[in-house]
Amino acid sequence: MTTKFVNRTPETQRAVIIDPDMAAPHAPSSPRQPQGVPATRRYDESRLDEAAGLAIALDLDIVAADTARVRKPNPATLFGSGKVEEIVTLCEEVEADLVIVNTTLTPIQQRNLEKAWERKVIDRTGLILEIFGRRARTREGKLQVELARLEYERSRLVRTWTHLERQRATGTTGGPGETQIELDRRMIADKIKLLKGELDDVRRTRSLHRSARKKVPYPIVALVGYTNAGKSTLFNHLTRAEVLAKDMLFATLDTTLRTLKLPGGRAAIISDTVGFISDLPHELVAAFRATLEEVLEADLILHVRDMSNPESDAQAQDVMQVLTHIHPDLDKSRLIEVWNKIDLLDEEARDILYSRAVLDRAMNKPIMVSAITGEGIEKLLSDIALKVDEAGTEIDVELAPQDGQLLAFLYTQGRVLDRFDDETGHIHLKVKLSDQALGRYEQMTGRA
Ligand SMILES: Nc1nc2c(ncn2[C@@H]2O[C@H](COP(=O)(O)OP(=O)(O)OP(=O)(O)O)[C@@H](O)[C@H]2O)c(=O)[nH]1
Ligand SMILES: [Mg+2]
Image 1 (tube, rainbow, N blue to C red):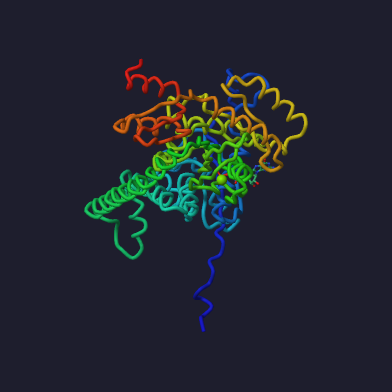
Image 2: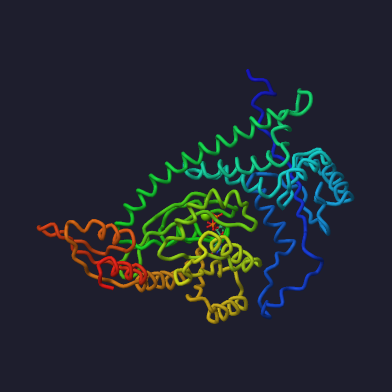
């Protein structure tokens, strides 16, 4: 018989969340902000809510949450000594196992706070990495997260060499010597190299699949947006798929593809992918770069927004910041904002939103929908169909068997709508090309 002490399920960890408020006290909203449009600065409460959402995604039990004003960040502990003391008392009162600090801590700050509070301290990056680690399902997703985690650890090690030191501290005298640290660093560097190699292999296989897919004359539509905006719900609604959609941050991590039926009988391929969050750790952006670049290659990008969230504008800015960072000359004509969750708005809020949508100066007007009730979805579908149809010029070409280079060009740069190989080996194609691709094609064939 097993004793009571073995196989005991670990109790849920009790977490305290501290959200450092670094903003200048009562900063006026930006003067550029037009009247009536909510300022994009995040409110304390929303920031706390979001941090709590992250903690819940890790099954932590939140026993206390508080905002702590930081007038001047202390390089050693971030907070002033009074605040540090206050938090010790709070932790003891609520019997917390760990403290989450909702910002990026330097390794020194993290170590000092752990000492002062006698508890594990996790910063925002650590928290997000942990969630990603649990959610990744595909080989590529797992490799991406592992890579990000190692990069994070390496930075900790390089700057202070404390991370592994702490793990090894029990039972040994003194910290590790230089040699040990060098070894640790080299070990991590080796592992990073190995992972990058594996990741390249996985991606090569996938890009083969992708070029196979490109031969299919389907336009590709990609969903992007802040975490919890409703991308998976919309994806499921549009494709009747069963992708995990949950009121949980980062429910989706791996890209999923499905066929989407458009009005008029045409088909497109739609992809659901990882969500964004403010202060997305740069290690993660780097690790997911290839995935995001691929998403941005889509013929049409739907930016899904949760319009019921008071932080919606700030969230949209964060998303666009990451996207334009990865793809600085992103063609905005391929971007449509989908304003989701309108079923949660009252009539007045809807009216305001509607006028905003009409007056919006984006190249494509935003579309208001509810992925739950289905409201607005028809309009969304017909806009998608219009958009993928209007992009580019359709041409008919005939290629000789030796025109392999041209054929490859048309398949990679255009959308082949129809193909007929005659008995002489000539290939007859109907291809849709963007203006840019058409220009290059004409140059290649000497027609320009
Ligand atoms: N009321 C309402 N709820 C919605 C709507 N769309 C999505 N939701 C809810 O919002 C939550 C998040 O939806 P998801 O589809 O998982 O969001 P996501 O954008 O895929 O999130 P990540 O995968 O974390 O990036 C779920 O609880 C959905 O049921 C909507 O139009 N109306
Ligand atoms: Mg999702």
